Image 1: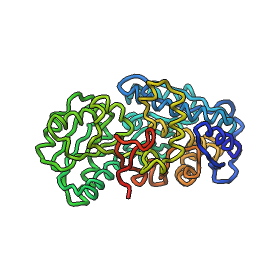
Image 2: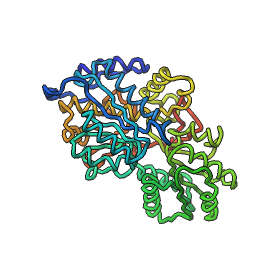
Image 3: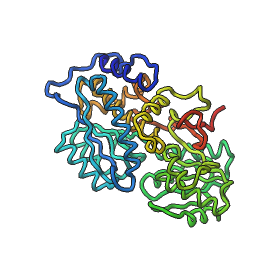
Image 4: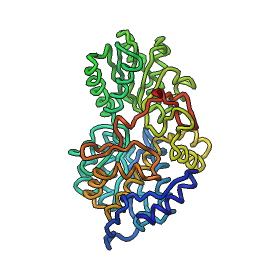
Amino acid sequence: MRKTIRKATMAVAVFGLVVSLAACSGGSTPTATPAAAKGPLKIGVPLGITGPAALVGTWARAGVEAAANELNRAGGIGGRKVELVFLDTETDPTKAVSATTRLINQDRVDFVVGPMTSDETLATLPMLRTANIASINGSSSGITPKNAPLSFAMLLNASDQAAKMVDFAVKKYHAKRIATANYSATQGKTAHESFLKTLDTFRLKPVAEAEYDIPVTDMTPQLLSLKQGNPDFLLLVGQTGSDTGQFELARRGLNMENIPAIGNYATTFAAQTMGVAGPNAYANLNSVTWSAFGACTAKNVRPQASGFIDHLKSTLSTKAAATMSYDYAAVWHDAVILLGAAYEATGGSDGAAVAKWLETKGAAEADKNKLLVHTGWAMSKKNHFLFNVDSLALVNPGKEVAPKIFQRIDCD
């Protein structure tokens, strides 16, 4: 592990980072890799390469490929080169099951990173558990130690996001009449339940609620129903930047743009949102995001984040760099790095052993690991999300303090 991390730390210099040696196993000597574990370490990556979320799939792919290249330049994981096995799910749960079945039975992967959505992930969890394969997925809801004992979610928990949004609306803006909107799939419904639960702690109830199906090309009916509640604050849990953009267009059409609002993942999908609603899409719409991609000033920017952005930009075309979601790509990058650290710490890819390490030592070791772009790690025996509510930042996606690092709105 020490040898791999030393080489990988040198490789991170291309990111423009000044980093120190960080042993992911906490300084202990990992058990020897089993003699049978020869050849490349295979990581299955089921993604929506085509279909409605193909653009998002390219972001995820860029992240895992960056991590694999970084590790391979340093000699691999436990002396084994990293081999990524991509399969297309089209973000369809049924196709995600087929892809995962192939990754397990034909490709015989050691780990899985993906799928991209909650519904896909929940459909694939049972087979990964049966095969004793550890995974880090793109779900934002429904992941618990009970139903996902070998799996961890890289995205921000929809419930945590919703709770943070309500808390900020009430405490910062002194909102009393809050209206909510969410899309109708698992993530949206989970967030809506959290809206209600958190509002109840303030002895509040939403003055209006709206739900919509994806894809949506006009949210005027939903916003009109919210307007009838005479809200002083709007909360949105959208799926992508497209529906967030439609939300903004409808706000303007109904003269609701002066009502403050908080959305989710607006930094991740900022380019899409502005593509729909124009460059002023975030004039009065803030967002929750990963803390590594929010800062109060340029001096506060996490060097791993700015370095990752610079490096990834250098590998992309001008068009791809302009539309890339660097925070999203970074969390897929970090998923590969974390699984590699767990492999070396435990001496293999046994799913149960890797999951136990992530639960008991993963967060503490991740905080020390200079190869990881993100920060605020929170996985534990009780939490199988890599992050929690304390890992979130509230930002203005329309203002950058550094390239793709957004202005925090909760600074003192």
